[in-house]
Length: 351
Length: 84
Image 1 (cartoon, rainbow over the protein chains, first blue to last red):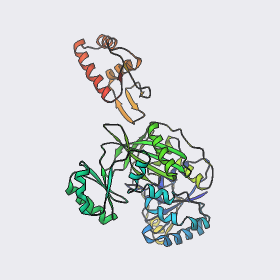
Image 2 (image 1 turned 30 degrees about the horizontal axis):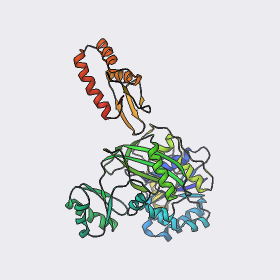
Image 3 (image 1 turned 90 degrees about the vertical axis):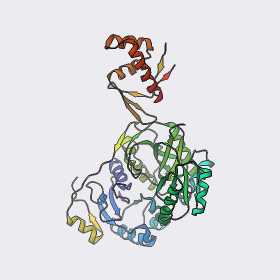
Image 4 (image 1 turned 60 degrees about the vertical axis):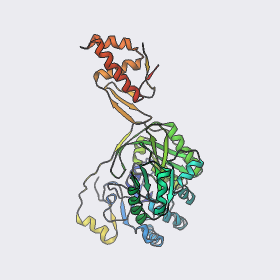
């Protein structure tokens, strides 16, 4: 089966494409041929042996959905791939709008719904959690610097200052909040989210919902090594039924469709879990779940092609992932093909 | 006389490596720490542990009782044992 996958930017803050592809390639029931969709000529997933069978450049989401659709249509006319798996947050709204048109070409997807995306948005998460008895750090939305004076009466420092789409800063006083506010507002727009700072360890859960409220797969992980960008560089699967039930509850209430990453902080003093974010796609550490016994990319693909999947509940506790960097050597001819023609055949790449 | 219990889900290897599956925390004990922890896990009372350690190691009872108390406090802080 031919499957197109985005997010093959396996860099220091990696996209989830390469680990998703590894899961698909590990599948014993799918003979996966992978078409890598790359936003840049140097995304490593386009060069790593054994990952993409062919790779095509696609336009950035900021170019608009018509450009995206035109390019995807062209690639499909050549490759006739069956399923498209977008793996990046920034693409989701665009591909969601294109679902019917992709479907008319015969391309299947398994994306979150617009409701899913809206309910878990950073500015809506607090309301969703409080309405569904899930602990969440207190937060307020601020749309101008005048509102920042509310912080000292409503929070204790430090606080977390978050952009509406990406990025977050920890601020220890009003001056640091103002500085973070300016950076985030100019980059991501308004409002800005001011969130209570919870001190504790970070726990994440990768999950797959079938859209009816059922959790098809879920694996929890403790981050054991975190980069300066807050990304997990190592982690270990844990056995915590309470945490899994929290995620199952959220998936059920959201009727979540597709993959997701639930980010929690466990309060160091009270041991309570606070849900701080729901990312609407599989995380870059999803291959840990595959290694622990739940092939979530394979399950997502099967849902996309309409197969019924039984919920997976077993996984191996104590499975560890350690990310590493690796200098891949290639030649100018290999790069040239993608740079000039916008496509590259990887079948000759040696494992 | 005191007795302790070790959480049933705590994984302990013979080399003294502890893994708490619910939190993902890991700990490493040295040889004597590992031996004492195994005795606690077996359900030995503190008096029995004192006798075993003083008989097998070059340490007097007074010093060991003090070290044992510190060790137990650490294990309790990390929620690796509970006093019964």
